[in-house]
Image (cartoon, rainbow, N blue to C red):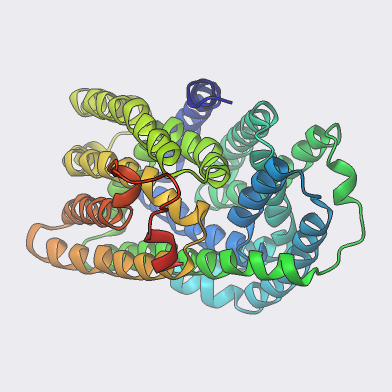
Length: 431
């Protein structure tokens, strides 16, 4: 499937996501205010960590190896059986750990220990979260973009229905509850879709560990756990810092702009995850890899730049349409957030080579360094410019990350006058 067709399907999925996100954000902003939106961001990061831990961090590996094995005509049975066994074991462990620390997480992440019951519910539903991500990873690896799009649409529709109903009935607590239970509805919908695939019987075989498959997947566990620790934890720390040195309202303004970024970047991020990861995993020739990356830049970067420019020009109107009275100070957070979004997509296109080529050591080091740098830059800029400084840090951090990725994988980006047999050294050096 071509990048253009993948982007078109991603656009369809994104159109529905944008519409449902519009309704959800409007409902949360109206009934829960900036503080509710901020706490929703905190819980979203908790769920991100839980998803990685409960899934053993293997979802990127499942996509990569399914794509590789299909191209090579290799059996997927041992890979799927190992993946299911690992997810079952990790889900139980994650549920016990989260359930035992429910009050602590509620008090220190959401700022209110009374939310402990929600955290306990999340622990009980951990298996659904992990199972849903396994199914989407298998669909992605098979390049079944049609079914994957339908799963994403199901997620959007289930999310908006639950969010509107629960936030209207319960306020902030309802918005948080909707975020927790949506994966259950999505998982059930995904099961109905994948039951018609030729690989569905593989999921019904007895879960078991295959040493070779476990070794390959464990490389992605290390990378994913690093992502789970660094990215979401950095966001949680920054929200707590802003709340302490400004207010939860300021956090809500930043979270609102961050949400807009997530929504409009969906076409780009879905195209990268659903097209580039399996495609780059298949390719071995450096020249073909270079063509794919450059084509990605030609397709995605102009789209991101034009959309970001439009959002900036019409930011005042967007705030009035998407949010509630009292969100007007958000306007000051847009410029550098949007600039950072452009740098983010530019860096992600080439950074997916780390996942496609399983360059574990490079991935872990870069995640730790740049997550730490984001926090460090944020503390500096917030101290000197106020809460809006976090957007300055975001833009600067992704600019330096893009430059670093371009330098590391320069052999894939710059044509070399040499024989095709002479492979780039990046993978060998950093793997």
